[in-house]
Length: 156
Image 1 (cartoon, rainbow, N blue to C red):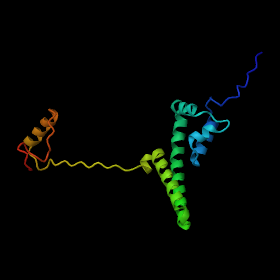
Image 2: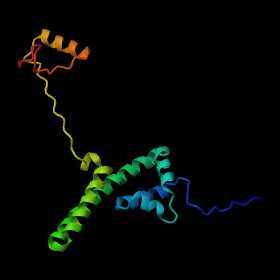
Image 3: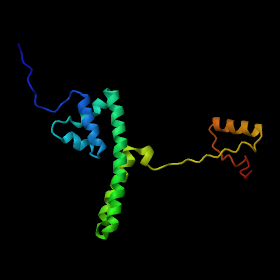
Image 4: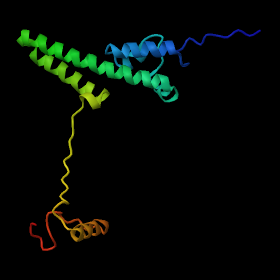
């Protein structure tokens, strides 16, 4: 009867317990890279493979990242508040806060990322059906003329 040998390496088999531990460490602000460097943890490539293979882990991981962003945002506020009391630490605190804001914007861009707004203006109410049809044909034919100008180049 053959006995199974312990390979002694890092774990590569997914387990809900290991997934819970990884997500718990993420939630308190630890990076995935530092988690994967810990003894008894899988390597980074294994965790990323698990994210694509295990839907429940992927959802759990996404939620852990959201919480991590909240924790980092709170840390940033605490660091900034502490720096106000110690003027010598202002430059260091600014760097710490900026790093946390940047990281939070990457792990939770919808909440902490830069907001980009696009303004579109459509003025069809003042146009006749013929003008609208003509403009549609121009766009279909690849003519890029400003919608505020007529064919003579003068403003409407």
